[in-house]
Image 1 (cartoon, rainbow, N blue to C red):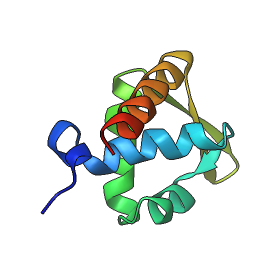
Image 2: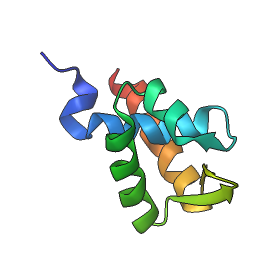
Image 3: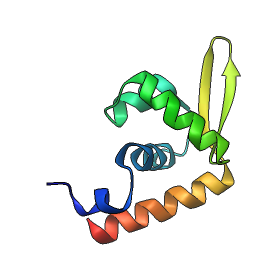
Length: 88
């Protein structure tokens, strides 16, 4: 049975937002994918959606893209994290 959090949110995107906010630093896509237990390609699709929504930005460093929450993304991640704590 899914936990209460899964009822309200799509698990992987919500966990990505929380993971990006947790350490409040720029992340690599491959590291983020491992943290939320999904494939790199699935993580990229989610991150592209989050970018379209204005929640994350990408910064190119050579061949690597770094991921960072926008101000709006930080606010959304804070709210998701608060809800996760309330409902367990």
